Every structure is written in C-alpha cells, then in structure tokens.
Amino acid sequence: MKVLVYVEGGGDSKDLRIRCRKGFSKLFERAGLRGRMPGVVACGPRDRTFRSFCDSLKSRRQRFLPVLLVDSEAPVSGATGTAWDHLRKVDKWVKPPEAAADQAHLMVQVMESWFLADVAALRRYFGDGLRESTLPRRSDVESIAKKQVLSAIDRATRGTAKGAYKKGRHSFGMLELVDAATLEERSPYAKLLFDALRTNCG
View 1 (cartoon, rainbow, N blue to C red):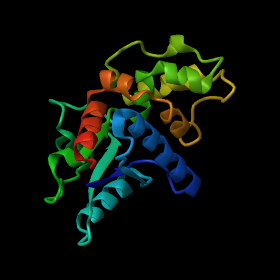
View 2: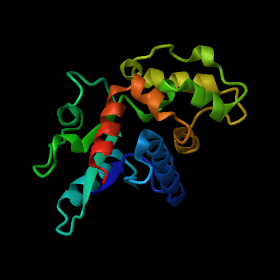
View 3: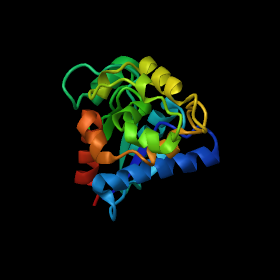
View 4: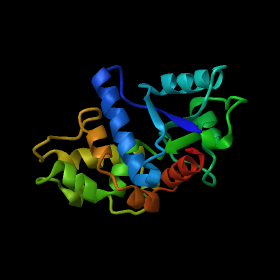
C-alpha cells in the first residue's frame, strides 16, 4: 500500500516544502525504503499537519495509508508506542477513530534531536568551525530537552561558514545527511517510525 507521511515542517514557502520533502525522502531511502518509498506531505505548522492528516482519513477515495509525524515538543512518558497518548496530553489532540496506533509518530523531542544523534552529519554539513565540544555527549538524545538541543546546535554552528543554525535555512539540508542506522540506535521513536514504514510500505 502507498503510504503518505504528513510531516510538520516546510512552512508556507513552496521552496521550503520541496526541501522538506527531499530531506525526509533521503532519510527514508537510507532507512531501507528505496523502491517502496512513502510519499512526504510537508504541511507547515503543527496544527495544520494534524488537520491535514485527519482530513486524509476521511477521504472516500483513500487509496493510501496516512501517517502523522510531528515533534513531541517535550519528553514522552511511558513505553515507546504511546504517541497518541502523548499528543492528547500535549496538544489535546484526540486520536481519530479511523486511525490506528501506528499511524502517529514523534520526533523526540524535536527534529533537531536527530542531528545530535549523528554528529558526523553535522560535521559534514557545517564543515570547519563546528564546535563539537559544545554539543551534548549523550547517546539517549530523546532525553535532551528541546531548549537544550536548539541552544547547543546554535552555539556549535555560530563559527561555521554557513552561520548559526536556522530552521528552514539549514534543517532539511542537514536531514539529508543523517545516517538512518545511527539514528535508529539513539532514537527509539525514530526506529518505531522506520519499522512501521518498512512494514506498511508495499
């Protein structure tokens, strides 16, 4: 079955949406999905992403499996696989009756957490001047608070030729370089996402 991943990100710019789709597509390809790739729908803001996902569930002509992918924005309590419970607590989003448990996934705590999982990719993207010593040296990247993730990446990249990290300007180019296997090792929720896509993508 064709899978469409409704992703938080891409803003309102056509160029950003294209770059968002490309970044996630490159990552999914490296996660072993070449030849059976999911589509990526760059939805922009968080609430719009959820609304677009819900609308897709109601389509009478639905010939695809929609999957929701958003930042968790906060630590996720409980065992992995509780995305809907988390989204109900954080966003007051109620799981649509048509949706299955594995149709909601989280980037914990933000997409940039995935960059901390693969510092080598940060090094390749930003090049000379990256201050790796300012980055958290923890393998459990999902436990690092959102604010700490963003401030650490900002400090580490200020002296590079590309300048300090900015969402949109750098985020999707960075995402293209993240190694999926390394990410899976350090982000259980990323592994849940990849496993669900491998199972559901025909």
